[in-house]
Image (cartoon, one colour):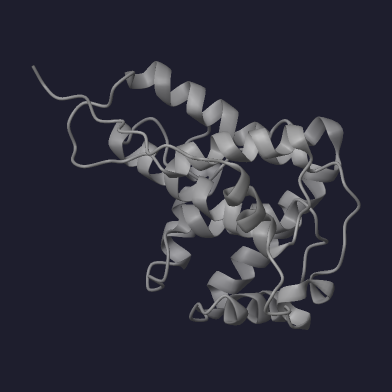
Length: 212
């Protein structure tokens, strides 16, 4: 896993320091979910998307960073080799395990939101992947006690999560302006996220182990 500097964590934390609508990991997950199936939009495109999702608009520098990273992610996921280098935005191993799991939980929830916004139609196999990702998003972190499974558990969760976009990024890209969210979603329409939720009973995982 890359350091905070190399992964971009420091850049995101700095750029979005005054923007508190959601965590930077969740926003990165949303961005990745959309970029799994869409061409990278310009800054105005992100403004429209954020507005339609009822988020406040971050600073100009933050929007530029989001736009640049989205373009990088979109291009990387289109390339079979580069795609395997993709990583969710989480803090590095110098941070407490609790912080890293919380960030991955946020990223997973954001990614599910992103593919829902993008209106992705899931295959049976992809539905299983998203179901497992939903379990990660549902991890319950009650306090900062020792996490059950420790570093081994963390690596398994991280490796699984980072491969989900790689597995789903095999479809033809579309322009974000053609997304139902921006064109006007019919009231009866359901997103991929909602459809997946109906088919999957996702347990809430208690990742905290009581101290002996």
